[in-house]
Length: 72
Image 1 (cartoon, rainbow, N blue to C red):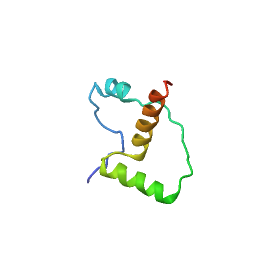
Image 2 (image 1 turned 45 degrees about the vertical axis):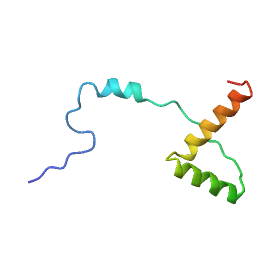
Image 3 (image 1 turned 60 degrees about the horizontal axis):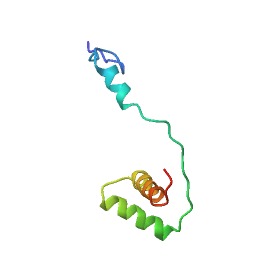
């Protein structure tokens, strides 16, 4: 008879907890913006062509904008 393991059952490498501490992400908040659909599609296409998410692109753009305007 075959036994099916439940998720999380079994041996974990001792360093798993150390790695998870390093990879823990900061809490996030949602940012919503109303954009014309044609502009949104351009943003989406640009992100796709540059192999990045819209979220990453937005963070990068806002960070650069704030640096340009002396706000960090």
